Amino acid sequence: MKQVRVLLADDHVLVRTGIRMLLKSIDGIEVVGEANDGREAVALALELRPRIVLMDISMQNLNGLEATAQIQREQPQTRVIILSMSADETHVAQALRAGAAGYLLRKR
Image (cartoon, rainbow, N blue to C red; front, side, top):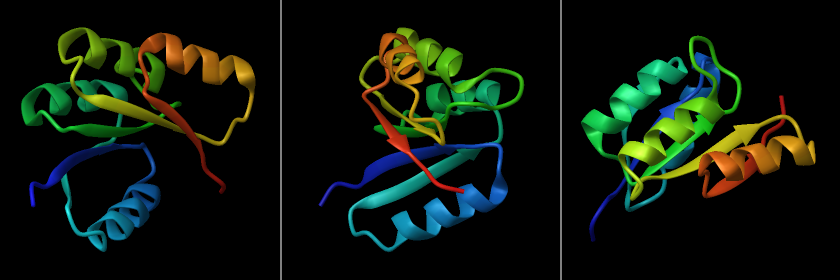
C-alpha cells in the first residue's frame, strides 16, 4: 500500500503533536513534516511534496490562507485542508478561494 504523505502546519506544538499521534495510528498515512508558521509550511510543501497539508488558518509570518494560495500556485496536486476554530462562512469561502480542498472545524 502506498503511503499518503501529510504535512502538518500549525503554530501550536500541542495541536501538531495530537494530530501527528492520531494520524500515526492510521495505516497508510505518513506525516512527512511539521511547520510552525505559514512560510515554513510553503517551504516544506515545496520541498517534501506531500499529498495533503493540514493547515491552521491563523499562523505567524504568513497566515494559512496566503500559504494555501502559494502552495496551490506552485504545486496544485497537493491538497490543503484548512483547520480553524471559526465556523464563519466568510472564512470558509476565503479558504476555498485560496484553493483549499476542505475546511475542518477544530475545538480548543
